[in-house]
Length: 190
Image 1 (tube, helix red, strand yellow):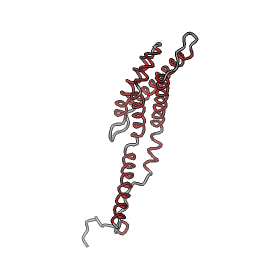
Image 2: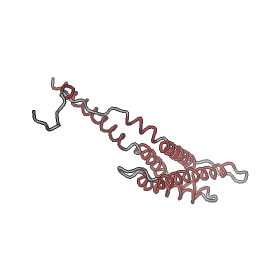
Image 3: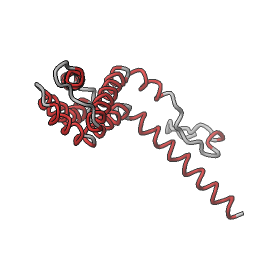
């Protein structure tokens, strides 16, 4: 008997957690692209050592600048994101444009970085041998591009899935609510 009560409490706790999660998403659906942007930042920053080692090993034009700009814009895009969606206000269109510019520049510099790696690996005179750091850097930069692109798509489609999230029923059914009669608030005494 006691075990059934405890398992029922755990099930209610899990259901309540899921309900609160969806209520939170309904109120601020922009958290979904923000999480994806956060993952892109973490992927890039946790693998910065292999990217730096690759830059030092290959050392061709603009690799260091691309690495610096990608890391800088990864950090600044969070600030811009927060300013784009202020609490309980409409999104700031200027900051939204600036955020999209930052996302575009990040994809561009990552593309230049990958191009420089491929150029060094396939050049005719003294090509660079592919090492573990170079492979890791290539994978990291590709993953960064993918996550930034997914964030951009999620930002564009935000109005669509915000409407879909609002349709999710997160109300709590309380026993006896259906049996309540209408309350007369007209203030007239009979």
